[in-house]
Length: 324
Image 1: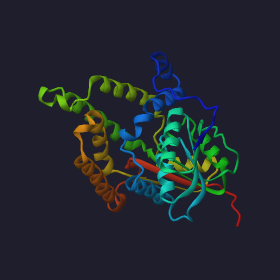
Image 2: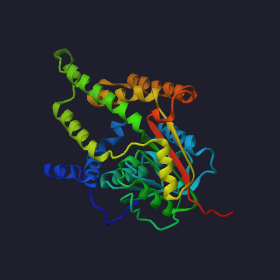
Image 3: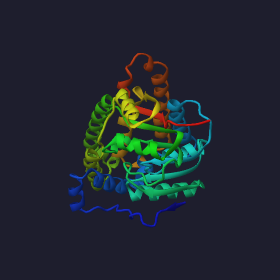
Image 4: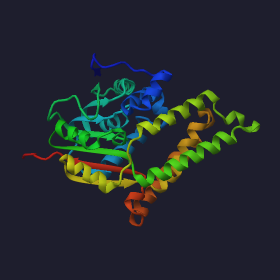
């Protein structure tokens, strides 16, 4: 596991002046917000590197890319965060070796540490997704999860993705918010946060309330989210962006409608109460409900609900020019 010795070090404790500057500089905001979140991000979003999340990552990949000859030789994760998508895909047999990049030094550090703990051959770089620091025709596969909506110029980033892909190489991006889905998810999240933080002010529920300092920190992080979350996507528009960047065999697919209507209140509630109050019973309820509602989304609601109403959109495409 290696990182460039010239990469900047993480800054998990931004000053008030830096936060204020970040309100006017989205890329600085990306670094501060994600360095801030890096060490606790897996816990916050219930990310793991076991069968549960391996199945989730493979499900997203297979759902949009379809059957592929596996494994890919070398894969890159763009905007890797803690490495969730690529590391679980590698464990699921999608790629042999990997590279991770993120604008946040803190996230690259955690992703490489996770890869080392899993014994996976991965290197990493702190990098801007609009100027990927790898040579042309380097990778067989590029993946990302919940990253495109953070990038100022999505089309430029996809041009870079195609540049570093080998001819015939594929990209798969998942976990991007649709425009309609983001509207109802944010509304549900805000309503759940307000209800939970107010109800737990009652004396007999005080032990269900996180310390005020933690709640204030979460509120500050939420304020930065308004700066780092730049885009939502109509699925057809996202397909057109990928085609304009030069990709072929482009396809977008959406998921999570009923699952999102439950998922966002559940995740917000988890962030608002002390984690020790929620045991394995809650975890089984949350995951089991998500799986059941996702099945309903896939088997029933996809037939009757317009694809733009689902919360997540995935997109795949191929670099042209492959030869036999």
